[in-house]
Length: 252
Image (tube, rainbow, N blue to C red; front, side, top):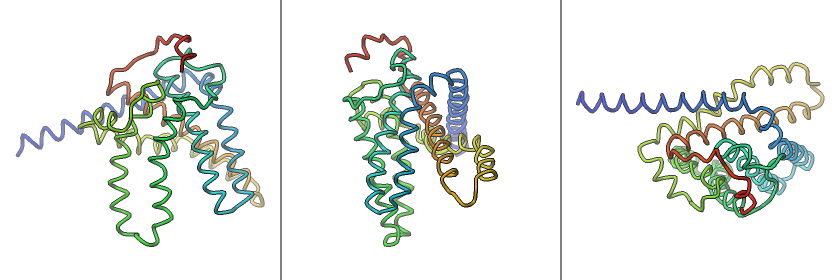
C-alpha cells in the first residue's frame, strides 16, 4: 500500500513540476514577445470588444447565439495565431497575424464549437437538470481538458482530432486540468489591480467602460492561456517547429 501511495505522490509531484514549467515558460514568452503578440492579436481583440458592445446594445436572446458564433470565430483566429507563434516562431504568421478562414481555422473552429456548445446548452438546461448537471460538468471538464491538446496540433496544420489529443494526454489528466482550468485563473489574478482601477475610475452611470476593459482583460488572459497550452503540447509531444519556413505558410 505504501508503495502505491509513494508512486501516486511522485506522479502528482511530476505533474506539478511540469505545470510550474509551463507557467514560467508562458510568462517568459509573453514578456519577451510582447510586441509581436500585441501585433498579431490586436485586430481580432478590437473586433471582439466591438462585438460585445453590439450584443449589449441589442440585448436579445437571438443575439446571444450570434454573439457566441462570431466570438468563437474571433477566438479561433487569435488562438491559431498565438499557437503558431509559440510553436513555429514569428515567421509562421504574417505581420498582423493570419486573418483568413482557411482549412486550419475551419477545422480548429469545428473542434472549438464541439467543446463550447455543450457548455452553452448546459447553462440553459440548468433549471431542469440542476444536480445531475454538476456531475456532467465534472466529467465534461476532465474530458475537455484532455482533448484540448488537439488545438495546438490543428493550429500547426496537423489534420488530427480529439482521439489524437486523448492518446497524447494518457496518464496526464491532472497536468491537463492544471493547464486548461487552473492556469487561466492564475493569469487572471495578474489583472486584478487593473480591474480594480477600472472600477474605481469608471463612471457609475455608464457600464461601457467596465465592459470594454473586462473584455480586453479576458482577451489577454485567453492569450496567456493559449501560450500555456502551446507549451503543454510541446512538453507532451516534443513537437518543435520553431525554425519554420515562411514558404510553408503560403501552402496552408
